[in-house]
Image 1 (tube, rainbow, N blue to C red):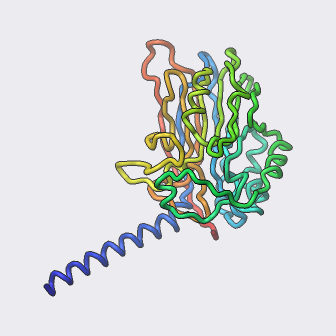
Image 2 (image 1 turned 60 degrees about the horizontal axis):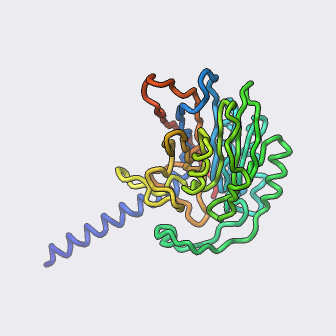
Image 3 (image 1 turned 135 degrees about the vertical axis):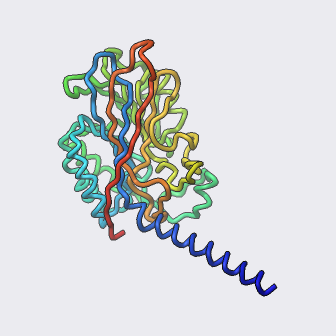
Length: 321
């Protein structure tokens, strides 16, 4: 029994050490392992010139996250034609200046945005089991200064797509864009933007924070080419070989990040986002990311595979918090 007990003890100590090392990596390294994901999506009208779209989501910014701010600002060197921000920028009452420092150089590029729940309300401590079990009970934190952030973004020329349809001229091409308020909070009113977008547009783009299927279905039914969303954090904790455990919405976990088809015509792109709640500062097998999408014309009938190519490259940084 003595040897048996010693073996059990060694196994327990080994498991504890592995668990501790994994938690340290997830909390201390991977959540700051800034990643640029790149994909090519065939969504433009025939004969259109390719467009570069930078997708930013779920910054969950606090004032002291300086490496995140520097890394996001550096994305301006990619020279995107359009920036799409799908919300959850804030995680602190004093974070608006930090978000604007991060986005600063990108605000000279045409941009559109919608807000998410953590633009409206601060995060709160919660039992992580509620996240895994998809608890529907929501307790809002203190209000955040989303109006100040909106005013600053609009002043710099970005378009608030909350229940709005617009036509944008991007690189000499017409882009039909529309968005809804956060479906996670059930603030969405798709009826405000319902209807077929301009059929002559090079691209018909829908924008939402949470990729709830009911909203995605509405965009697809109206004929949008691409819908962009965030919210899922890519699952935040992924199991190698299995993927995301949850999406924190009704979207199936296989679509927690990246590009996928939604119906016969529409593409969906979900960003895994660049942040976490301050009360759950861990990521595993799911580094924080922004995405550079190269949009190209749809293949003509019989021309071959209608698919997306995807890759990722990594940056590095260290934040105080």
